[in-house]
Image (cartoon, rainbow, N blue to C red):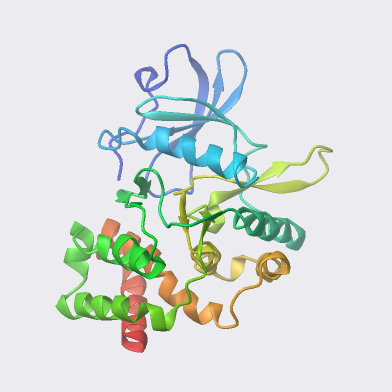
Length: 297
């Protein structure tokens, strides 16, 4: 999925020199390295493809918005160039533990983020979700925004065209017309946008004795809060229930939210299908998409 397999010096912003680097795993769209700079600082370097000339700038803006507007813990942006984003390295880069307290802290942090509201859905510019543009044109209608910008926008991508047939497309279009019956419009809030387990890392607290959640790799927009929370369900049973219960302490969810989550998670299913077509374990995703269409369309 990338045209970069080594971290060459010409990819770095001017004035930065890497002494040591090692690749990190976990993402699906862009290569990432943990590096020691010549001045001794530990940083994380994320590299964009050549056809993503604004990815680094957009992600830097998103991280700052989450931190400054929503109080969400994010890595500090050190620098960016057209091809690279340089972030402070958090702890040892460990993925989240299964500790219930860690996940409760994460749930409350996301609930506080979702207290930042907007009268419209969208963002000031289009972003990226994995390989493809995330369309963010402003819209006052949440159902139309989700239908057009988060579901139907994937159907013309090569992977989706290869993996989905005419019946799938027609079913998704019917489902989109029924969205007002199926999903409540809870208003537009500031969302992380790509909130799955591997987009949290464990950072040290000030006393150094505990870890706290730090959020990375956003696809920011004003959208339904439930699109963030629902995506955590796609991470499987490895996300402790304490995340969801702590979130609801601050922001109660609709009684039927877990059922509605299947519909909201069509966006992520379609993103993966559009990217990988029949590959990368997409058989289960395609089957789930078809089950959702049968049930709700």
